[in-house]
Length: 485
Ligand code: NOJ
Image: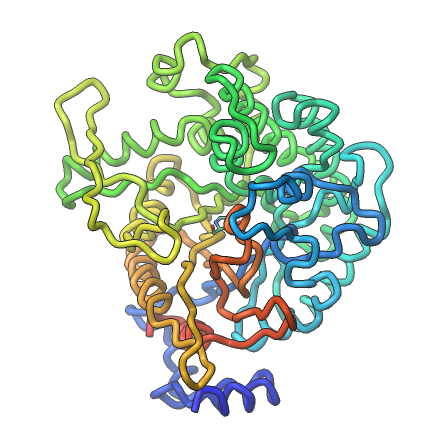
């Protein structure tokens, strides 16, 4: 049935009632969202999906794009699980119009994508490549023509290789400065249409996996002091870019980070554990959100780092904590369950039992309460008034059923539970303004290649055919009714 209905759906791309999966009429759904029932999300809550440039665009050698560290890394033997590269990926560079229709068919009103720095500045600095920017011009026009609000991320890990070669990438503050120049250029040219800009996606992962564990590009394993210095340069890059966006963007341009904060959850919700969890959140995010929002490294972090602390000036800290308009949070999993403790830090992190459940990716533990506690703590600790969930989603095995459809009930289970916790947060007044589901469609999952699928749409990477999974219908219902279904 789903197959037949999916085809019908695609014939009338916006008419998802054809899926027949809704148990309520379109009229009562509209009435529900107009009333904004207490059990639903706030009126004007923004529903979206997210992707990033390197993971979907392909066309790596087209129209003057320069190489990025991920091109180099993916082409190095043994780095990517399935030996793939993102040379073609979803071929989104050529199929963006079709992909915008996929967003529209979900009823989503927002889309978070990233701009490939090496398309705009193939050498990282110097002469811009007009054809590179043209692509984002076309994409923005297409999104706006379809009633979808664009949210652009400036850096989703695809550093121009030239900057790695010249400066050692983020090992040098020259890269932070080059990032600000690129950010200012993009803001000057695109902020007539894109009003919400994220600086850096997941500082935390790019530093530790790229420069510490060496499992992401550029594949380095630096000693602790150098690693902390990279961390500082990334935070500095964020601050300089936020300033540049303000200086060069049109009036009304808004800017903020998109961070995968270390998520701490009270193991049992007692007042003492809740307080201990707040302390843990502040300390365990010292190098990113805490310094961005407080303008200082915590005493705990500096004591722990000792002689390995980064070198910085007071001016650096001012730049890092430049005013921002919102905080983006990528929330996937609970990193720690916390209890209050009678020790110096005031908290203790509990070990995970080996039976703790996870999704298809081993690292993706299932802890829906992450979606409640993380925004609540960010709002409370730093008095943040505007939060976006810039990513949340799950990998699933996605095996086609006998009828060819993907009944990804596990992904739906994951989303339903996380969204229930998000609804708990918004109903208590936590200022979350929107949610971007990762991901619109299956794509290049970094070192897992194409083996791990996160999409609402299945992508056949041989034919580039996109087909909605059952979770696409689920998400469409959530959006239409503005509540968990
Ligand atoms: C976060 C990253 O920003 C994104 O690129 C990645 O695909 C998802 N996590 C899933 O791992």
